[in-house]
Amino acid sequence: MELSAAILGIAVALTLGAMSPGPSFIMIARTSVAFSRRDGLAAAVGMGVGGVFFSAVALLGLISILTAVPLLHLALKVLGGTYLIYLGYRIWRGARQPLVLEITALQSRPTQAWRSFVLGFATQVSNPKTAIVYASIFASLLPSEVPAIVLVALPIMIFAIETIWYSVVALVLSAPSPRAHYLASKAWLDRTAGAIMSLLGLKLIFETQQP
Image (cartoon, rainbow, N blue to C red):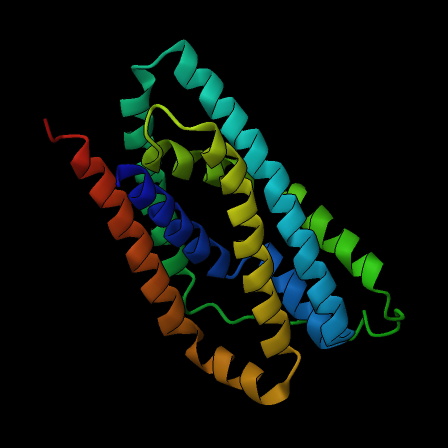
């Protein structure tokens, strides 16, 4: 039960993180608006593959540390919870910032899905903060002993979360009416995500104080 709750918590935290507008979100949005829905979906798959890469790196590093120094698990939970609070604050603070899609300079490029896939993958792996986010969430929520099947399942889950979310972004922002509705609702959506992320971090820190 504890492991199932941990995996559910990881899924929620990573989904909220993916939903927060950042470089990856902007790239998918611009690709979908400037080129085609097909390009946006290809870039979304590239984002998912990049997520698998960073999640594997984060998991291997975390397991190595916990194996060497088991007492670090408690400290990592506190640090991870603190980082989640920080992420929540960043999401909340940026809620009012408009989402700018500068597409005029890109519209001359012909549609080519494989290039969009490579762009999505490169955008994901060029941001080392992604690995830090994964490691913080894993350290905060995973138990000290993790079954091998979970080490395989987590990257698959991350691929699904990243690919599905950015595919939704591609589908929504490639159509004018849904794009307008999203932009109008961006502030309260970001604030909701930021509040949930911060509450999750507070919950993790509070749990470390329990006997």
